[in-house]
Image (cartoon, rainbow, N blue to C red):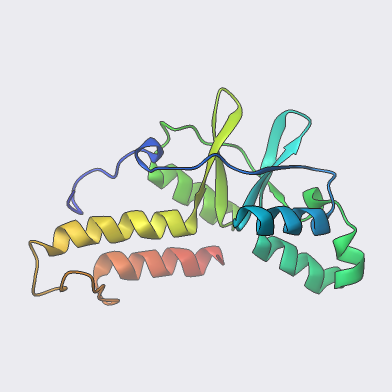
Length: 167
C-alpha cells in the first residue's frame, strides 16, 4: 500500500479478543487483570453495554489525582472516558478522529455491540509503519528499509496528531 492509497478499514488489522472489566470493579482489580493478561487497555462494561476503554495511563493519572490508596479502591469506571464504539467497517481516520477528540489512547471495536477488539495508538503507529515501509521500498532516498525518518511528512503529521491529542 502506498501513502496515496486509501488506508484500510480497522477490520484489516489483526486484533485479539479484548479483556473486559465491569464499571464497578476497583482500579486495583483492573490493574491485576491488565497484568495477568499482559495488556495496557481494558474494555469497561456497564451491564452488558460498552462504557469505554481504560488504559494503565488513565489509572496512573487517577492515582496522581487522588493518591494510590484512595484511587486503588475507586471504581475503574471513574478512570475511564466514556466513548462510543467503532465497528470493524470503520476507517482508521474515524478511529484517529475519535481518539483525538476524546484524548484517549484506545477505542473499543464492537460488532453488534459486542466488543471484539481495541484500536490503540500503538496499533495506528504499526499501520503507519507498514504503510511507510511499503512506500520506502520504492523511495530509497527518503528512508532505508526498517528506518523511519522523523522528518518524513507522514511521521511529522502523526507526531503532531499524537501531541495535540495528549496521548
